[in-house]
Length: 96
Image 1 (tube, rainbow, N blue to C red):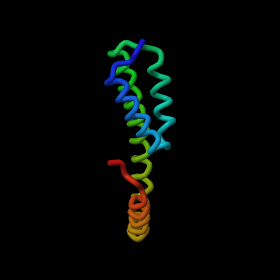
Image 2 (cartoon, rainbow, N blue to C red):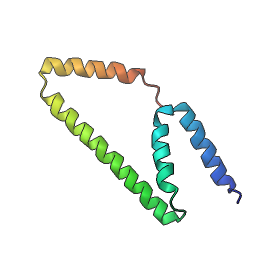
Image 3 (cartoon, one colour):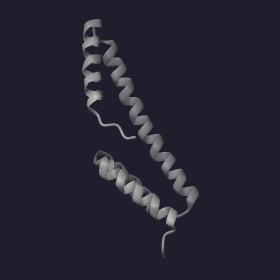
Image 4 (cartoon, rainbow, N blue to C red):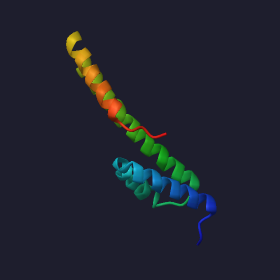
Protein backbone atom coordinates (compact mmCIF):
# COMPACT_ATOMS: atom_id res chain seq x y z
CA UNK A 1 0.00 0.00 0.00
CA UNK A 2 1.39 3.39 -1.00
CA UNK A 3 1.66 6.14 1.60
CA UNK A 4 -0.13 9.46 1.04
CA UNK A 5 2.11 12.39 0.06
CA UNK A 6 1.49 14.14 3.39
CA UNK A 7 2.73 11.10 5.28
CA UNK A 8 5.80 10.79 3.05
CA UNK A 9 6.63 14.47 3.67
CA UNK A 10 6.16 14.07 7.43
CA UNK A 11 8.40 11.00 7.56
CA UNK A 12 11.06 12.74 5.46
CA UNK A 13 10.95 15.79 7.75
CA UNK A 14 11.20 13.55 10.83
CA UNK A 15 14.16 11.66 9.39
CA UNK A 16 15.96 14.92 8.58
CA UNK A 17 15.31 16.15 12.11
CA UNK A 18 16.71 12.92 13.57
CA UNK A 19 19.83 13.27 11.42
CA UNK A 20 20.45 16.68 12.98
CA UNK A 21 19.55 15.47 16.49
CA UNK A 22 20.93 11.93 16.83
CA UNK A 23 20.63 12.09 20.61
CA UNK A 24 16.86 11.55 20.37
CA UNK A 25 16.87 8.58 18.00
CA UNK A 26 16.33 6.22 20.95
CA UNK A 27 13.12 8.07 21.82
CA UNK A 28 11.93 7.74 18.23
CA UNK A 29 12.64 4.01 18.31
CA UNK A 30 10.62 3.75 21.52
CA UNK A 31 7.73 5.61 19.84
CA UNK A 32 7.93 3.46 16.70
CA UNK A 33 8.01 0.26 18.76
CA UNK A 34 4.99 1.33 20.82
CA UNK A 35 3.00 2.38 17.75
CA UNK A 36 3.80 -0.73 15.76
CA UNK A 37 1.08 -2.72 17.53
CA UNK A 38 -1.85 -0.68 16.21
CA UNK A 39 -3.06 1.29 13.20
CA UNK A 40 -6.14 2.69 14.91
CA UNK A 41 -5.66 6.51 15.05
CA UNK A 42 -7.29 6.95 18.46
CA UNK A 43 -5.24 4.11 19.97
CA UNK A 44 -2.08 5.61 18.46
CA UNK A 45 -2.87 8.99 20.01
CA UNK A 46 -3.50 7.30 23.35
CA UNK A 47 -0.11 5.57 23.15
CA UNK A 48 1.61 8.84 22.25
CA UNK A 49 -0.04 10.61 25.20
CA UNK A 50 1.09 7.82 27.55
CA UNK A 51 4.67 8.12 26.28
CA UNK A 52 4.61 11.92 26.63
CA UNK A 53 3.20 11.65 30.14
CA UNK A 54 5.89 9.15 31.09
CA UNK A 55 8.69 11.40 29.78
CA UNK A 56 7.11 14.43 31.44
CA UNK A 57 7.00 12.61 34.78
CA UNK A 58 10.66 11.62 34.40
CA UNK A 59 11.55 15.24 33.68
CA UNK A 60 9.59 16.43 36.72
CA UNK A 61 11.50 13.98 38.91
CA UNK A 62 14.83 15.31 37.62
CA UNK A 63 13.72 18.92 38.13
CA UNK A 64 12.62 18.12 41.68
CA UNK A 65 15.95 16.45 42.44
CA UNK A 66 17.78 19.45 41.02
CA UNK A 67 15.64 21.82 43.08
CA UNK A 68 16.41 19.93 46.28
CA UNK A 69 20.14 19.80 45.52
CA UNK A 70 20.30 23.40 44.36
CA UNK A 71 18.62 24.78 47.47
CA UNK A 72 21.03 22.81 49.64
CA UNK A 73 23.91 24.88 48.24
CA UNK A 74 25.24 28.10 49.70
CA UNK A 75 24.57 31.37 47.87
CA UNK A 76 28.13 31.36 46.53
CA UNK A 77 27.82 27.77 45.29
CA UNK A 78 24.48 28.59 43.61
CA UNK A 79 25.97 31.56 41.79
CA UNK A 80 28.84 29.41 40.52
CA UNK A 81 26.44 26.63 39.50
CA UNK A 82 24.26 29.10 37.57
CA UNK A 83 27.33 30.46 35.78
CA UNK A 84 28.39 26.93 34.78
CA UNK A 85 24.88 26.15 33.50
CA UNK A 86 24.76 29.39 31.48
CA UNK A 87 28.11 28.55 29.89
CA UNK A 88 26.90 25.04 29.04
CA UNK A 89 23.55 26.19 27.61
CA UNK A 90 25.35 28.76 25.49
CA UNK A 91 27.23 25.91 23.78
CA UNK A 92 24.07 24.03 22.76
CA UNK A 93 22.96 24.41 19.17
CA UNK A 94 19.21 24.94 19.50
CA UNK A 95 16.94 23.92 16.61
CA UNK A 96 15.04 26.62 14.82
